[in-house]
Length: 147
Length: 147
DNA sequence: CAAACCGCAACTAGTTTGGTTGCAATTTGC
DNA sequence: GCAAATTGCAACCAAACTAGTTGCGGTTTG
Image (cartoon, rainbow over all chains, first blue to last red; front, side, top):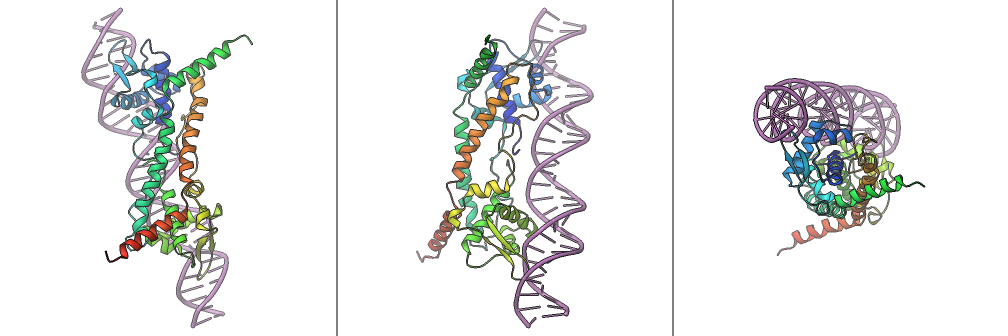
């Protein structure tokens, strides 16, 4: 698995905050759902707060909530907030300028890789937290039906 | 930078093999262009050979060449040959089944992430080694012009 | 004032990455 | 037939990154 799982954790947390947006959730509650650890969750929520996607309040009864409506937060927003650097990594160091291919390939590859990354990001940008919350509610409702 | 730079190295090597497809290149020649190391290059070319993109011959005058025409090899082919596993990584371990979000998010996220990865791969699949070789030749020709 | 929170730094174990070393096997020119 | 030029492959290595943990200080509130 390529990148870190921070995006998955961030989207999971945002979906919880969207699902229970009438109250605030603690990092411990979110960590319980992730079978993880409150500190880890706070690290990621911290990045989301830096990106103005969530708000935190300190002290007793503190916790986390969405900074905007769930339909105004896309999976790309979450991804961009927690994942640093390009997805496809470039040459470890610049190639040789002596070689006809070496001295041109970096710029050519940059265009291709950036376009490919943008295609992925565009797809992530088409789904919002509201979509995921709705799908969770739909599945849970169907399960609750008698038959 | 997220993934490894193996894709960049693989595409660089394939472009060299396409540029000089009348002869075979040694791992040392390719390593020189990458300012890297023949063993590292052979490791990556080995994966490309496993994917039937290149051929190697042993012994004196041995080396590497393309197994198909440059226009029949896409950047996605190179990417798929050397990069293992998904680009966007999933939950580090399954979330809690106790939580309404936890027990549904994995499947929902899987769909989103797979679609996003496919969008990226589709974009990589639209450029071939022949395209890159042609662009290298075009740039070099322009540079050679008097004015 | 104590309990329930967040914030943050330091630390750990495990994995991955890019790179290196050493050596065996293969082919070929002389 | 032998030496040189190659690939093939395993064993390392240091640095970086990942997920997770511990410890502690600061803030809010019942």
